Image 1 (tube, one colour):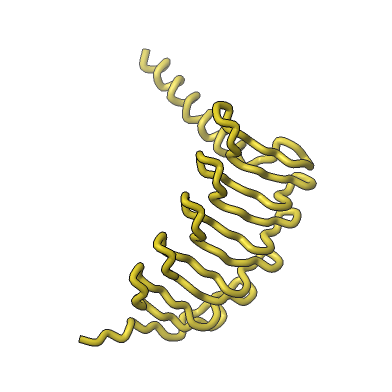
Image 2: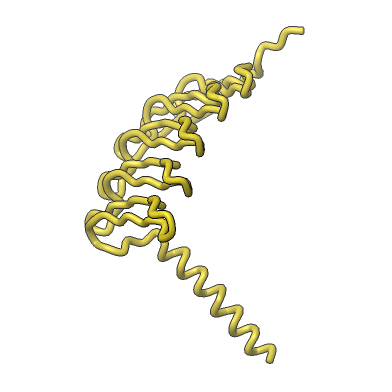
Amino acid sequence: MKAGIYFLCFILLSSCNILSKFNDRPLVKTGRVIATNDSTGTPIYEKEWKNKKRHGIWRDYYEDGKVKEEYVYNEGIPMGTWKSFYPDGKMKTRGAFVDGKESGLWEEWHHNGQLSFQGQYENGLAQGVATTWNDKGDIIEEIMWEKGEIQRKEPPNISY
């Protein structure tokens, strides 16, 4: 009896592991895959493959059909503007990739629209001042980066 239970647990765990690995593998070598909710018809995700590699615009959706995340790939390499959104459609994060590396301005917002993070990247490495704010707009922290290394970390100026 115990052997049967162990075997059943093994099969269940193995199938979960197989499915999780399979979920990110292309069903097609080249082409676009769009999954929709069977009952509502709203999109769940859109993915494109080229030569078995992620390609083009990838989108994930909330249950109501609003865009949750949008990414761009060029034959497996992240590129272009990457964005994520709150369920109400407000921007959550935005940043860009060049040749698979973070590049330029990256930003994140609190749900109320207040900026929560802003920093620069060059060739995949943090560069310059990165600032973090609370949801009221008060600076929480400023970090000075140079080629991905922290040069200086400053708490906010607090006046009493």
